[in-house]
Amino acid sequence: MALLASGLASMLRRRERAGAGQPDDGDGLLPAAWRTAFGRLWWRCHEQGVAPLGNDLDLLALCAHPLAAWPVALSLSDQDLQSSLLVDGELSGLAEQSTRLAPSVDVESEWIENRVYEALRTAASENGGEDGETDRAYAALRRLLIDRPFLTDRDLKKLERQFRAADRHGTTYLRRLIEMAYVARPAQGPQVIIRCVGCGNILADHDSRCATPGCVDQPAESVTVTPLAAIFEQHRATRRFVHDPGLVEARILDRLSASDLSRRVRVTAYPALDTLDVLIEFLRLDGDGTDVVETWGVDAKDQTSPRLLGRMFRWPDTLPCDRHFLVLPHHRARQIGYIADLKAELEGRTDGVEVVDEKRLVALVTDRARRLGR
Image (tube, rainbow, N blue to C red):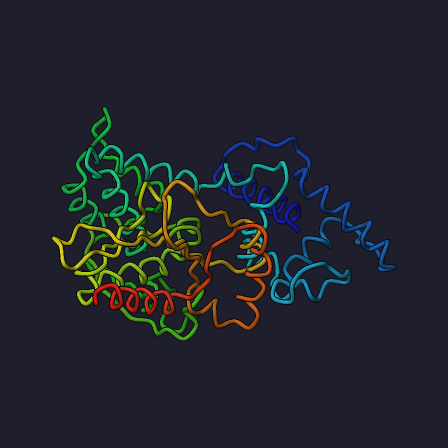
């Protein structure tokens, strides 16, 4: 499945390059990962007594159907079998996760996701300095990508006064980040934008259903913005790989930074340039508020497949923590079998990691802070 998804990703990139008038850097053949996956599926059909797939177009059409409906039995979890690999001509969440497991196929390095993160790290480094300034700049810029699915050129000019560092041509590193993570759309004067209340992503109209995980029942709202000449909208890669999965991180950070916890808990967003999502330090109340008595680490994940998440997950060892948490958004945790499948896949791969949902984490932090404060 990983090879098949990787081949699909390569074909979609070729389509994007062709649409942009860019030359194809391939050899004219279908991607090697796709050809290998087709061969393996052909033999699996043969072994199961199923009529083998006729050609590549048949397999491509099959990718738009749930895997449970495929004529050949696949060794996947019940949850994964309910997903397809293509949705409206784009990779599904399951397919995107699967590409990361593709052996000897470096799809991820070519994704624009990596270029966005590189621009993010560069902007943080150039606007940072000593005493944790780079970490703070990174956290602020990362949060910008989560909080602002769109912004105007007026907004960008204001932000450039905060993040002033520029290259030798006078272009700020912040602008380079925005140009990498967003698409500029010409617009002038008051503009009405319809967005999802839950995640902030732009919708086509008030009747459109938001496709962001966890936003099924969220309403739409209209907002008016006034650009000088352009509105910047996050492109699909930024939404899928930075903004949408970052929503759970933002909710955790906001709740743990609330005033009722702030005296007893110090919360650091994306410590050591995103080694973890959240570092939680419990403070000694009888001192000056700087003595740390216990440290918890949090890595939040919002992914379609629990089994693929379990196979890919690795806890970073560079930040010592007393407790380690893999935190799920509420909409994933409440799916029947999700946590059980994830824990089964994690067993023997990662020791000492506690799997909880976002609400349970906040409850645990609140309770621990209260107990330590006695």
